[in-house]
Length: 288
Image (cartoon, rainbow, N blue to C red):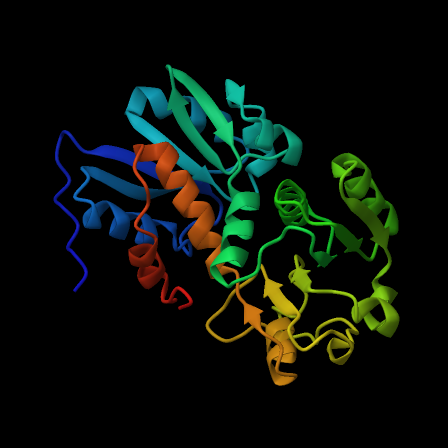
C-alpha cells in the first residue's frame, strides 16, 4: 500500500514545476509519492506561469523558499537564460528542465537525455554501439540525441520534414566517435535502411490529434527493433500501436518521464529516487 503524503508544515521544503499548461502534469503525483516513501518533508506543486512573467517567477524561488523546480514546455529554452550556472549537459542540449540551488547559486540542468537512456536500459537495451533512427528534430529530439551519443550510440540518423533543421541538429551534436546524419522523412519507407535499425524513436506529436502517423514501413525493421514514443496517452499512440501490431517491442514516454524525474529528484533531495514507487504513481511497471 502506498504511503500517505505527510502533512505540509512550516518546515516543509517546496519543489515545483513551471509550465503552461501544467494542470495535466504527472510530475506532482510521481514526486510526492517518492517523498512519502522516503518520509521526506517535501511537497511538489504545479507552478503555472507564462513567458511574460517566467523570469520573475524563477527569480522568486529563493525568496519563496522553493528549493528546486522542473521546467516543462514551452519554457525549457527560456530557463536556460535564467539559471546562474548551467551544467555541461544543459549547455549542450540548449535547454533546461531542472532547476536547483547549489552553493546558493541557481543551477540549470537537463535530465531528459539521461532519462531517455535510463528508460532504454530498464527495457534491456543499452545505447552503446546501437544504430538508431530519430524522427523529428525539435527540442526533445535534441535531448534524445545528446543522451544517445553520451551513452555511445554508434550510428544515429535524424529524419525530419525540414532537412536543414535535422542537419543543424546533427552538426551541433556530432562527435568523432559516433556517426550522426540528417535525412528527409522519405527514409521512413526505405527497406535497406530500416532493416539496419535497432531503435526507432518518435520525437514528434504526429498522430496525437487523430491523424494517421507518417508513411512508415515498420515491417522493414528487425523483429527486435525497439520503438519508443516520447508522447504518451491513455491509449497507445498511433506510432506505438502501429509497431505493436507488427509485434515490435514498444515503450511509451512515461518511462522517460519517470527516469528524468528520478535524476531530478536526486538533485532536489540528495537522495536516490525510489523508482518503483514513482513508476506505480505513473501507472506503469518496471520491466522484470
